[in-house]
Structures are given as structure tokens and as C-alpha cells.
Image 1 (tube, one colour):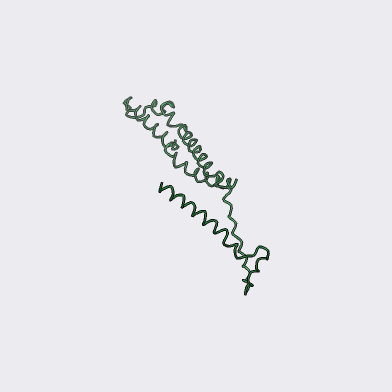
Image 2 (cartoon, rainbow, N blue to C red):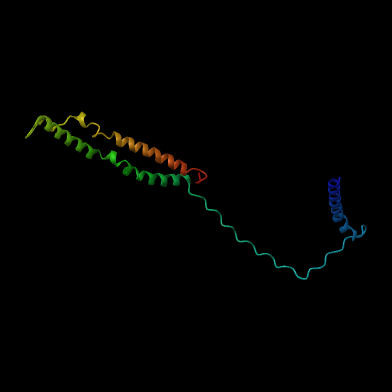
Length: 159
């Protein structure tokens, strides 16, 4: 029973403290008379200086400008990325030279082999086409567009 009575007295003490805080300030005043005027101030503080205007946040770049800049720099890298596939002339010439060399070796031509001087188009069709270059450029353009759409959309820029 001792622990319960301790809790009861603690609660009673808390209630008494709250009531004392409410009652004590009102004991010094009469209920019928007006409250006394505050003492006069000796000097008035100077007026506050106006705050300087806050700098407006500069809007970010427009999304169109952002996209143009992003795409321009991305597009500039496509040529070097696809250069292996886009050097068609070099690949085509190399293929034709190798085809002629192999033809001459198989025919045992010491001088001129007319049938080997004009390698068939089918032997070097792939090497002489722009198919891989076109595909490389297409996929790199797709990557640039996706990257720039992600980097240049609100809220990263102003629509």
C-alpha cells in the first residue's frame, strides 16, 4: 500500500502547484479597480531599418535550352563512338583487297587474273554497306534523346 499512497501524494502535489500558479497572481489585484497602468518608458527605440529586398531566385534554364545544349554535346560524341562501324571506305577497301589477294592465291595467278580484279559484290557487301554505322548512329541518338529528356525536364529546368 505504500507505493500507491506515494503516487497519490505526488498527484496531489502536482494539482496544488498548478492551482497555486493560477491563484497567486490574482491575489495582488482588487477585482473592482482597473489594473495599474504600466510604468512610462524612458525612451523610444529607433525605428527598424527596412530589410533589403531579397534577391529573387533566378529561374533555371528553359527546358528547350537545356535539351538543345545537352543534345548538341551528346550528338558530338556519336561520330567517335560509331567510328569503328562508320569507316566504311576503309573496311570496304580492305575487304576488296583481301578478296582479290585470296582469289589470286587460289588461281595461282602470277600476273593479271582478270576474274580476280573485280571481286564480287556479295563477298564484300556487308563491309561496303553502312548498315552497322546506321544502326550504331540510331542507337546512340536514342541514348542521347533519353538522357537529355531525363536531364532537361521539370523541375530541373523551367518548362
